Structure formats: C-alpha cells, structure tokens
Image (cartoon, rainbow, N blue to C red; front, side, top):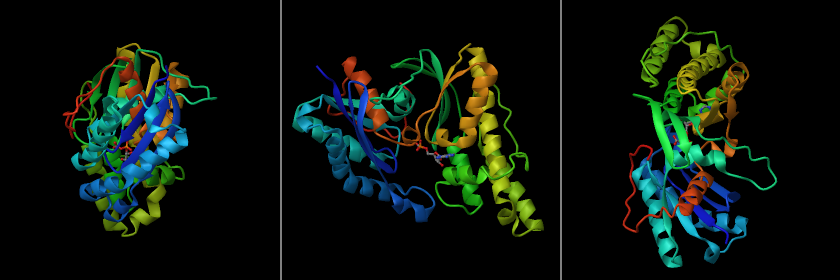
Length: 340
Ligand code: KG4
C-alpha cells in the first residue's frame, strides 16, 4: 500500500504544503509573504497573521495539484520547530485539526532535519541522485550555519556550528548596511556576479575546531564602510558590485575552510549543502571547485528546495512514517531546538 504524506511548513514567513507519495514529490506549494519587505526583515506578528490567511488555500492547492484527496493521506507531517512561535503555532494547530478530523497520524519534523533530508526528495522522470551515508551536510540559512555528519535518515550529529550570527544573517545585515533590500542574500548574490571578489579584504575569524563565527566579519564590514564613506560619501554607490563580491567571497571562504577541515577529519567525500544560503552562486561554484580539486561527490539542492518549503517536511515525514515515529496530539511547538 502506498504511503502518502501531506507536509506543512510555517516556521518563518513562507506558508507551504506539499504531498509526497512513496518518496516521490507530487506537489509543493509555497506562498511567500511580501508584507515584510518594507520593514527590512520578518515581523513575527505579521507573519503569523499571514499564515492564518494562507494555510487553508495552500493546503487545498497542494492536494489539488497532487491529484490526491484528503481520504487518501497516510499522515500529516508538520514543522514543529525551530522557528517563530506564532508562525509555528499556525502550522502545528492546523496539522492537529487535520489529522484528528481524518483519523490519521501526525508526524513532527525538525525544520533543520528537513533541510538536510531535502536531498532525498525524488521526482518522477528525473535522475534523483542521492547522497550515500555517511555524508557531510553544510546547512546554511538565515538562522543556522552548521556542519552536520549524517549517518542515516534518523542519525545526525552537529560537528560544528556558528557561535554567534548565521551566514545568512551576516549577509542580510551587511546588505542592510549598504541600503539594499530584504532579504539581502539574493541581492548580494546578483551584484557579486558583476564585481571583483578580491577588491576588498574583510576580517576572517580564527576560532578552533569546526565552529563558525560571523559577527566579526559584520563589524569589520561596517567599520570599513564607515571609514571609506568619510573619504567618499558615495562610496557604496561607486563600489556596490565589488563590495558584494568581496563580502560573498569572504563568507564562502569561511564556510568552505571549515567544511574542508571536517571532510579531512572524518575522511568523508560525499558532501551536501542545504538551507537558504545554498542558493548562492558563489557557494555553489566553490562546491564544484572542491569536487574537482578534492574528489568530493557533491549534492547541491534544486533552488526550490533551498529556502523554506514543505516538500522537505513531507519527505522527512515519509521516513519517520516508516519507523512509525508518530507524535501525540498534545505535542507543543518549540521555537528553539537543535537536531535530534
Ligand atoms: O533557509 P532560509 O530560507 O530560512 C531560514 O533562515 O530558515 O534562509 C534564508 C536566508 C536569508 O538570510 C537569505 O538572505 C539567504 O538565505 N539567501 C541567500 C540567497 N538566497 C537566500 N544568501 C545568499 N545568496 C542567495 N542567493
């Protein structure tokens, strides 16, 4: 009998629902929230209100596109955390009501696990190349920068992580300092393609082990700009592309240095990247260069699986369903949590 999972994701500012049947993606609907753009960041209160408006039509659309009726579903998988509490509560409450009314199990999914397992989503008539265990996954988003050792679907260990800001957060903050829009990541990425990555030098952290730090880079970027603007008030406008390219190159170098170290230390050559920042062209190119230079087998997600989406929640739910790893009705959402 087929396993059909409805996935629901509402941890931040994207309302998403997806349907996966026997590991194959049938639909993945994502409704973003433009309301935050004018604020230069996600406003939690507005995000939860928008989820309330979006969740029913998004789920309806995902089922419709999948050609699946509610009665065919095996389980409802939902993001339980980490994320914004008000946003999470919308998805969690919806999943509870939906599963109770249909009499099917509920599966709680850690958002970070979902990002990692996005590499196992299969699509009909596509090649579907997947990593073999064990592999390393660099998880880089607005809230996380982690190197994860993935031994199995349900066995992951964080080898290193940021001790302060996440890579995406640093990019977004530097972009804000430059007066660019929100989120800064895609804007910096676009500008960087036309700039010189060696034009400017920003400080890199010197911390032991496999942990990251990005707050020093942010300060270095801010102070350098302040000095340069004193000499040329239009400095940012005159050097926008070079600033973006140099910032991006510094962040990519920091990320890859530690990832290389982890790959050496654990003698692993299967290396994946996940999370919003994995959409970055500079980072994707660095992965390709490392594949060539160090013989890595690399796994770079489709753009649609880099940012928040319910397909990754549904695939994680699919694996947990097979383990009969269900969640009780009284399970609360959690805003902060690490990998299980
Ligand atoms: O995974 P994600 O969608 O949300 C969470 O943080 O969970 O990641 C969002 C982050 C933001 O910081 C955004 O600026 C960054 O991913 N991002 C990018 C790119 N696209 C999104 N950073 C660099 N280059 C991009 N193309």
